[in-house]
Amino acid sequence: MSYKPPLSKAEKVSITCNDINQSNGGNIAAIDFGTTSVSLAYTTKGDEKINTFLLDADEKSARVPNAFFLERDENRKISVIAFGSNARNRFSAIKHSITQDFIYFERIKMLMKRSKNINRQALVRSFSGEKFYLLEVIAFILQYVKDQLIDHLAIGAKPLKTTDFDWVITVPAIWDARGKRMMREAAYLGGLLTESSNGITHFSQISDISYPIPDEINPEKLSLALEPESAAIYSQENIIEQIEGDPSTAAVKRPTKYMVIDIGGGTVDITTHFEVDGGIVVQNIPTGNAWGGTEVNKAFSKLLESELNDPSFQNFLQHGNYSQQKAILNKMFYIEFENQKVLFGKELINEILITLPKKFVKFFQNELAKGINGMEYDDDMDTLWVSNEVIESKLFGPAVDGIIESTLSAIEDSEHKVDTFYLVGGFGGCKYIHRKVSAAIKNAYSSKGHDVHVVVPLTPHLAVATGAVMWHQNKGKVKGRCVDATYGIGTSIPFNPEQHDEHY
Image (cartoon, rainbow, N blue to C red; front, side):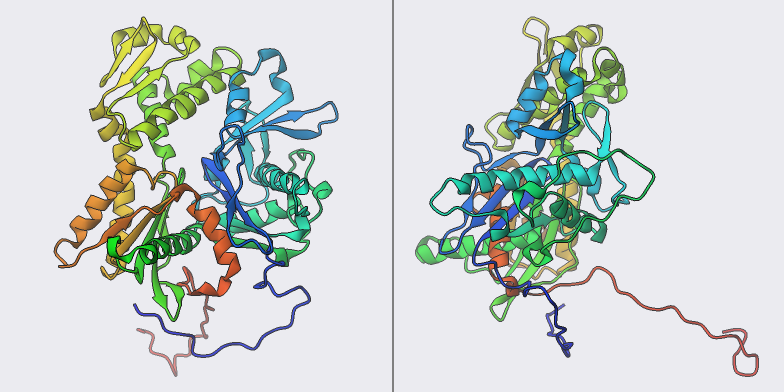
C-alpha cells in the first residue's frame, strides 16, 4: 500500500488555546511510562541537545524500575518516599509492625493493555492487598517524576517552573482510546499542567459514584506520543548520524523503508515507516502483543508454582504477613531473577543462579528436597541453578516465539517492502533477542533475493523518551497514519412489497 495525500483538507476551526503544534518556547519534557521502567528526557530553550534525566542519581541511571513506595500519615496524606530500585529495596526490608502505614506498587501499566475495559473506575491492588483508583496511582507516579525534574532545574542556572514546559507522555500504539485518555487525565490530576502545589495529595475513597473528570487545564501543553513512532524518529536520526559521520564504514545505507519493533517489559509494538517528502508515513495499523520482558519473569514464577505445587503461591502468601510475603516473592522474581535474566539476555551467562530467601526455603523445604525438573537445588547454599535448556525452552522461549510471530505477521502485511528493522526497548535491545529475531527476519526474506538489516540503535532503552522530545520538536514529521477503525451509520428502509423483492 503506497502513501496517498488527502484528497482535500477541511477548513481550519479557530480555537481559544495556543496552537498545539507550537512548542512552549523550546522547553519540552517527555515521560516514557513503561510497564517495568520509567524514563524522562527533556530539552530547554537554546539547548541544542536532548538530555536524559537521571531518575536514580545513586545508580546514575536514566531508566529506573516503575516501582514506588508511599507513606500515609495520620491525615491520610500521601507522600512518595522512594522510587525505582530504592523503592524495591525499601519495600523488601519493611517491618511487619509498620506495613499499614505504607503502600507499594509495581508494574501497574499492564492493567491498561488493549483487551481491558479501562475507565476512571478501574482499580489496582497494592502489594499489601488494598485497592485504589488506577487513575490516581498513575497520577502520583507522573507527579513524582515531574517534580524530580522541576526540583533539579529550580536550583540550576535556568530555573524553570512546571508550566514553562510542554509535556509529552508516551503510550503504546496498540492501546485503544480508553487507555490513552486515562494517561491524559492522570497527567492533569498529577499537576503536570499547573504549578507544583496543585497536584494530587490523597487517595480517594472507593465509591460506586462515577469518578469525576479531572479539570483539563492548559491542554495545549500536553501531548501523547506513540511509543514506536517516537522510537522510529530517534532510531532513524541516530542511524543517519552514524552513517553520515563515516559513510565508508557504515554497514547500511540510509534506510527509507523500515520497521520498528519496540519490545519493552510489557508490550511489543510494531509499526512500518516509509520516508515520504522528508517526513514519515506509518504504513500499517500498529500491531503487537503482550510478549514483553516480564513474560520471562512470569514464566519462571509459573514454573516454580507448578513444581512446588502452590498455584499463585497462595499458600505461601497466607503464611505470615501478606505484605512481607509478597515482598519476598517480588525480590526473588523481579530483583534476583531479573538481574540474572539481564545477564543471560546479554549472553554473558548460559545458566541462571538464584539465591532463595530463607523464609521461602523453610516453607517449601520438603518440595525442594524432592528436586525440581531442569533445576538443581543446593541446600547448603540455598541456591537454585536453572539449566540452559529450561531457560531457552520454558522461560525465554514462549516470549521469543510471541515476538517473532507478531514480527513475521507485520512483515507479511508490509509485503516484504521493508529492508531495515530497528529493535528498541529494554528487552528488544538485548543481544539474545536481537540474535533470535534477526535470524527469523532474515529467514523470512531468504527467498526474496535481497538483504535486510536488523539494527539496535544506541541506548535502545531510552529511544522512546528521547524520540518523544524529537517528535514534539517537529510534529509535522509524521505525515500520515493508518486508522485502526472507521465509523459509519447503519440505515434501513421499511419493506415495500411493490418495490422490493422479498428474496433479497
